[in-house]
Amino acid sequence: SSGINAESQSEVHRESCDKLRLLKYGTPITQIFSKANQEMYDRRRRCLLEQIDAVIHHARANIPMRNKDEAEGNLQQYLLRQCPKVTGLKEYLLDRNYTSPQITNDILQLLYRSTLDMLLTRIKSAKHHGLIIDETRDISGVEQLSIVLRWVEDDYTIHEDLLGLHQADKTDAESLLAILESVFLSHSLDFQSLRGQTYDGAAVLQGAHSGVGVRILAKNPKAMLTHCLNHNTNLVLQEAATLIPLICKTFGLIQSICNIVRASPKRLAIFKEVQVQSSDDTHANLQSLKPLCPTRWTCRTSSLQSVQSNYGTLLETLDHIGSLGGSSEGAKAAPGLLSCMENFESVLGIDVCLAIFCPIEEMARQLQAKGINARVVLSLRGGIINHLHNTRSNFQQLYDAAEETAKSLGLGSPSLPRRRHVQKKMGDYLRGAPATDHTWESPLHYFRQQFLEAIDLICSKIKERFSSVTLSYLCSIEDLVINCANGEDPEFGDNLTKQLDGDLDLKRLGIQLAMLPAFIKDWDRKITFVSSIDTVIECMREMKLARLLPDLHILLKLYLTVPLSNAAAERRLSSL
Image (cartoon, rainbow, N blue to C red; front, side):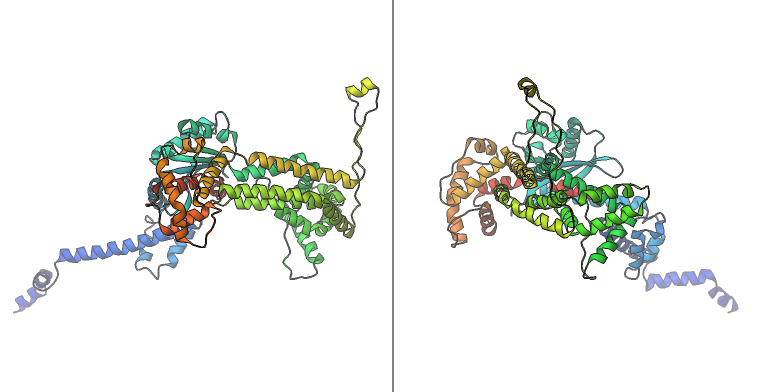
């Protein structure tokens, strides 16, 4: 019995008993291992999904994921905070291979490819696209090309989606077109599907002879070329700021003041201290000094207003900076800037610039909307021109208000500039006459002449720059649809016929346009007259008439596909 007891206590006996028990009553060992592996796989899968969600969160919010110390990186710290919620995440993070920079980059690349593939599937379903391109140099000095496609869904929702930022080692038209061709080829896109293209006016993109737009037009004449309306507006304002002395001096003064005050923390602290001391209400929301950027579409007015509201504060600030002395750039420039600000011309210049630039910058904000139509553009153009013409008669009020402001601040009174000595012209020598120069009757007449000249210049340039072939084409589509919606017979011009040939059946389109008034009346009996194409689009969307009126549906999508502004590409580059 002692031998049997000894045998029963042996390792071999116990192992044999365990195997017999598992065979008769328990789970096979292979299944146990398989179940354990499956549980481990499930835990790791949940951890990986949590990691992917964290990467998406950081990428979407543009938050840096890594740090010099990998354990202190934002991604690592975020996942550590999720450990109590996700089983096994702490052990998952201990294996640094799963959260290494290479794995994170691979996840980002897979997310990019997956998102892009889904986006391209939707874009290709639209059949026709608009192209928006812009280029800029990033902080590392690398030239980046932003490529955006504009497309329209069947419910007439407009999308402007980024295909990517592509490095441009060369910035000539041939090289940029080669990059564009490579992108289109890699995404299985066709230049023949383009129905519009918009650029910022750079010669390499929109040159009349060999720009990228002209080269695309050679491949596809239906890709309507448009100079971005926002850039056109900006060029009009820049031209006025360059050619009109009063406006030129004002912007130069504001630029210098903002640079001097904002460039130094010490000088900025002086400005804020003087601002608080000058304010009656210590809890008031004081307006800060905003910089002037010549390339921003809608920042000039805010900069002008910040200087106007802080004019007295700036006078004291510059006086204080100048009294401190020193050899810094600010100390040297402060007395000269103070002398300029004490002139009546500076006060009047700010008032004049605000009177002219405020409505135009409001128009620039409206032009950034991707759903803006051609008629609205022309209405904005006409409204701005009429407003500026009406402003011509308001100069006396601006002048009187500037005089009151200058008087309240203790500044100089209006005066004429010093007369220049004019050299004799050849005719003067031949006639024996002395050199003559125009003499102004008073400062009022001198400044009024510049004010009127600025308005005339801006109005003429707006008329010139807001008259294009693309706007005429879009207006012809609007006129066709609106006239037919009001019961008139369809009339296709030669240009419209040529542009739409191959995209739809004009005979069937004429029949469908004749049916349109009945559908609009059935949709809303209160409508007695259609004045906008947006009404027709809304009717088509709500009544789901795409299948009943397929050619009209295509016409409206073609109309909405043409881009008028490259604001979408500009916004993508602004994030660099």
